[in-house]
Length: 163
Image (cartoon, rainbow, N blue to C red; front, side, top):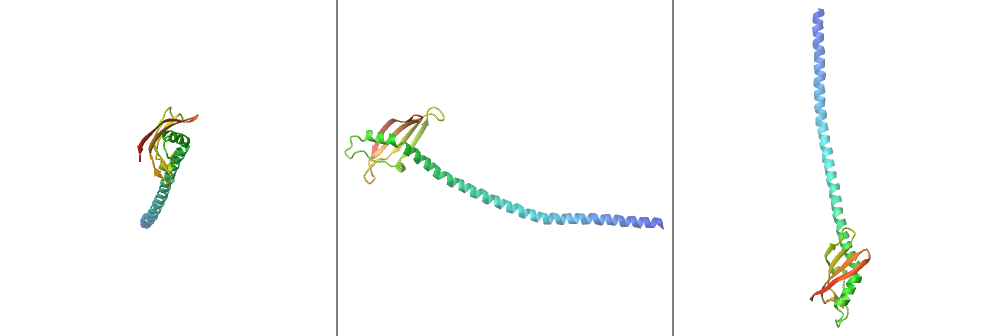
């Protein structure tokens, strides 16, 4: 009788352990399914958030750079105005209308040549469209100005064409 009791007890013990094992597996699968759905939602939300943040940052950077380039270009042209005025005075000294005016917005930077490395001198060539009165064009002129630590120096100027 003791032996039968031990076998029955052993069977129930084994059955209880198997039942606990199976319930653990079922709970783990249920947790994984539930956790999987939650994880999918979290990953989708984070991906969407990263897309929006990167898109808005990128568009802000593009918009921030464009005005800065124009502003630097206009500042450089305006800083060369004493030399540009001097060159136009020389080019149009015999003109009957007098010395023409010019506008920074209608002046192009043709090239900038670096002479002695970073921080050294630069030769800046600009193309100016001078005008008389209410913006009546007179011609196109190219002017080269050397800019260094001591200031600026007019290097070359030439009248390219009449308008």
